[in-house]
Image 1 (tube, helix red, strand yellow):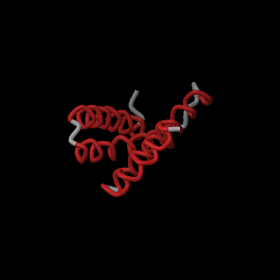
Image 2 (spheres, rainbow, N blue to C red; image 1 turned 60 degrees about the vertical axis):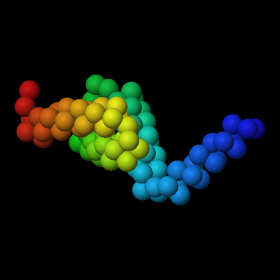
Image 3 (cartoon, rainbow, N blue to C red; image 1 turned 30 degrees about the vertical axis):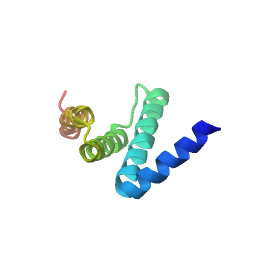
Image 4 (cartoon, rainbow, N blue to C red; image 1 turned 180 degrees about the horizontal axis):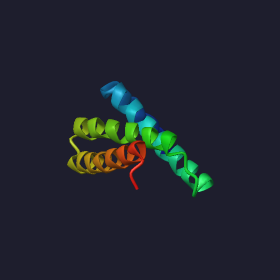
Length: 97
């Protein structure tokens, strides 16, 4: 029961601190799960036109989230993943094999 109280308190404080960041982190969590589920059930015919924008929007938002939390690791990982996926999405859009 103490864990539930602490979790509620964490979300309350995080919301009061920066509501946009909390929403962005929750959005990223859901888009990451959604794209993973889409990949799992639709492979090898993954709809990249849907999954790439979902994934990219989440990783781009996480750059801000990491920055606002002062987390170098989150910022670096999010920047690298965003760059990799922008290249992949561009290749997909340009139909480069």
